[in-house]
Amino acid sequence: MQKHLVIIGTVWPEPNSTAAGSRMLQLIALFQKDNYSISFLSSAKKSEFSSPLESQDIDCYSIELNEDSFDTLIQTLQPSIILFDRFMMEEQYGWRVAEQCPDALRILDTEDVHFLRKARETAYKQNRELVFEDYLSDVFKREFAAMHRCDLNLIISEYEMELLTETFQVNTSILQYLPFLVEPISENFTNEIPPFSQRSHFISIGNFLHEPNWQTVLQLKKCWKSIKKALPEAELHVYGSYATQKAQQLHNEKEGFLIKGRALDVATVFNSSKVLLAPIPYGAGLKGKLLESMQFGLPNLTTEIGAEGMHGNLNWNGFITQTEEEFVQKAIALYQNEVIWKQAQLNGIAIINQRFTKTLFETDCITKVNHLNQHLKQHRLQNFLGQVFQHQTLQSTKYMSKWIALKNGN
Image 1: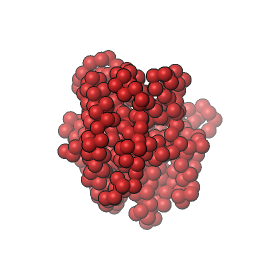
Image 2 (image 1 turned 90 degrees about the vertical axis):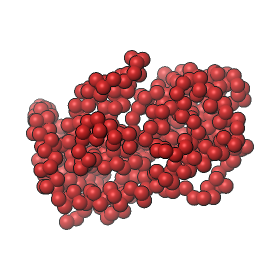
Image 3 (image 1 turned 90 degrees about the horizontal axis):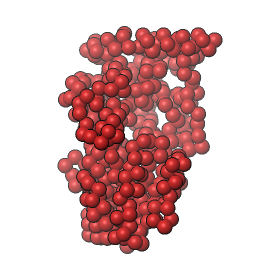
Image 4 (image 1 turned 30 degrees about the vertical axis):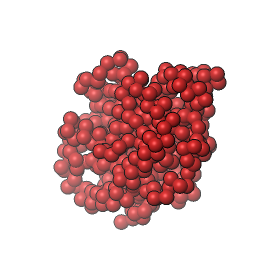
């Protein structure tokens, strides 16, 4: 049987704009390494920053929501595996896939667990501690059902694996821990990048359309004056794609708080900066900006939420802070003290090499995928909750979609 993977994407991947875009290219490389042919389908419009997938031997198709033409296309493609890049894609197309390609393995790449991020956002915006009820939102019910309708779910964070298995009793047979997959860092790496003495200024980076990133920028604005007072020569360069009008309004030359917009060359920006600041107030998954800072040898400051699932029992690539006052103090120390800075840099390299090197995870993941593909019927019999959700939840989604298609004269 030909190994053919179809990916149904919310958007066309933009690896230079979002961590999700980088993650998708890592997954594509993982399957191509195991000789899968790949087709990528999306109803989104491509942008000038979309990755040129065709140049990587990937067939690309534009699809429409609530259109029966999808059924014809997926039947023609006859994939052995279908991967949804978020649970919303499974909701939209999962029932069509189940009808047209019942023997195809269905995988959900969660990106991060959305209901966890939603629960934390709710608690944060109400200025209180998270309680269990916060988890049980509509997002939870939708995502939990989508996860069970799929044969396998890729989970990016150890914390989320623990939450799903221990708190919500999700069977490990439908879960696979798969963090960011990167190349190891060589021993002489620190000799190849600019040293402490040749760097200046603080940096922050993150796609402005992602709400936790915007809240992070607001946190930075609150504590920047105290940092600037101690380090009058320092500036904070805030980078991120899709900078909004409200973000541009925070730009202040006099304060040294500079909204820079999209970083066209992340390597250049990271290699000239001294410290990355990421006081992330809430979120889920793994933070691509913090992983990148370690890859480039750039120490950072973050919060417990920011560092979650990343360092295990290893020392952090800088400092993990709990209060605004501590964040300010540690930012100043990391910026001024070369000994602390160099040790932070080495800590980051250890985290990359021991916890995110792709060879640690690729074989396990592909082995599990191929095993499930060969024993799919038995696997689905054991995932009886999935059958319940498949039967119940999707009836409403399916008939709403059919009604819209009919209404559109399709």
